[in-house]
Amino acid sequence: MANTNLPRRIIKETQRLLSDPAPGISASPSEDNMRYFNVMILGPTQSPYEGGVFKLELFLPEEYPMAAPKVRFLTKIYHPNIDKLGRICLDILKDKWSPALQIRTVLLSIQALLSAPNPDDPLSDNIAKHWKANEAEAVETAKEWTRLYASGT
Amino acid sequence: MAVALLISISLIFLGVTVLILVHICIMGRPSSLSSQPSERKQGGLSPKELQKLPCFNYQVGEKRETELSSDCAICLDIFMKGDKCRLLPFCGHSFHVKCVDSWLMKVPRCPVCRAEVESMGLEARDDGSGCGFRCESSLNQRIEVRV
Ligand SMILES: [Zn+2]
Ligand SMILES: [Zn+2]
Image (cartoon, rainbow over all chains, first blue to last red; front, side, top):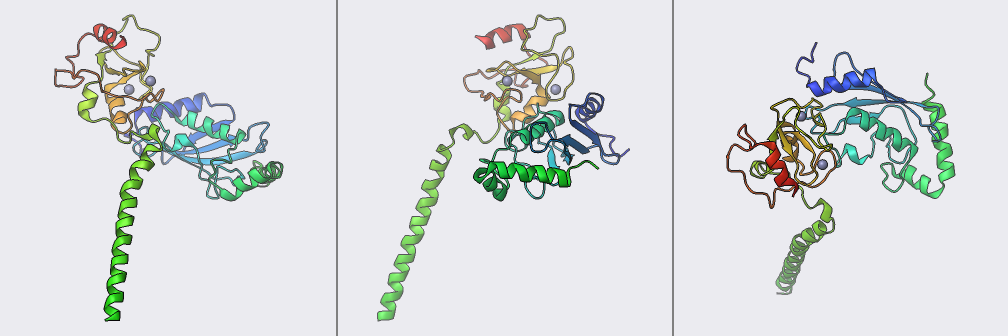
């Protein structure tokens, strides 16, 4: 395998993710690169993303855990803190990263972000404006996008 | 004559503009820094500052308080007897020296609770080796630290 010098911490995290996954979240490493994870997050209940299955990619940089993982949505999603390219505006992925956080805690935070969109700290200006101007309508759009792009199959 | 006058006036005007811009640049910087006092500390700790932080060799079976967990939050390994550990003085969280030092050199905050880590007010260790094998017994040191 091409991952002979994979740090023990990454191996441990991977084992725990596989043996004891968090509810609504799955993450499995790619076969040819153990630092690259295929992630699926189920849209939380009571959120506009309920019923959706969202694919993400997660990559552990060389400096991990001294640097945050890189995470991106692959499934299109209508959310004020996620942009067209799937990039996520989340403080723990930027300046609030700490090496005591793990892949699991990062994914749980992203799942929580789906339940609590924050249009005051937007990554996607248009969506945030829409959210602030007419939340009910924005939520409807988010539900529609969930049906269109995240319906699972 | 009129052309020369025009040129010199515009040169003076240009000079004044440059001066004003320089002034704004210099004066603008400190005020933008002071507007976010919590982010004041940008860099991490130096090796010298790290040496001032308390350290101990992990002992199995030693009476330990609850704040000392049994594994290191950075490498996720269980602490083993003799492991060189560092105790952060203000919050009491501990980690392997090798694990936490590389983080504190980047960001001077506790990885678990984000408490700011400062070496100010702590006495420099005189063994010169930083947190070497010659660390004093952990118990004495911890009492000192907790006062
Ligand atoms: Zn450690
Ligand atoms: Zn702490």
